[in-house]
Amino acid sequence: MRRDPQAEGLRWLEQAEADREGAHLLLEGGSYHLACFIAQHGAEKALKAFFYAQGEELVIGHSVEALCRWAARYDPEFEALRAEVAPLDAHYLPARYPNSVPDSIPARIYNRLMAVEAPRMADEVLNHVRRKLRGGPRAS
View 1 (cartoon, helix red, strand yellow):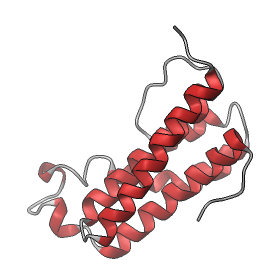
View 2 (cartoon, helix red, strand yellow; view 1 turned 180 degrees about the vertical axis):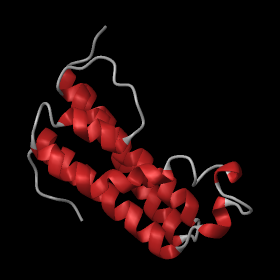
View 3 (cartoon, rainbow, N blue to C red; view 1 turned 135 degrees about the vertical axis):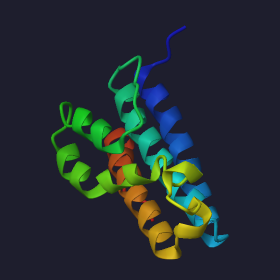
View 4 (cartoon, rainbow, N blue to C red; view 1 turned 90 degrees about the vertical axis):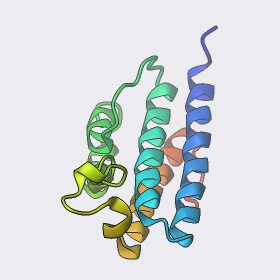
């Protein structure tokens, strides 16, 4: 049975919000590389929530930048968001795999500054999508 698009979008948004909390816990725990990856992943899920709420049935891709570009076809406000949050894509692979970091590992090269900035950008995506789906105020 196909879910109601709004309900499906909210379901994905709920998971994105749970990922947001996880990224903040990882940041505070000093797992900076994982905080960055989970922040990227949460932003990706929030964008997918927007698409499902629009009635899309299959949303493929992991790039926050590309998903924002696609979302701008529905709502031009996503274009401005795209420019701000596109750097999240830099955390999709390098934060996870040693072979994406020459002569080191992600756990050594990621730092607190990076791990503060990535969740901040993810929060921008979440807040934007939350307003679109729920019409509510920005969360902190």
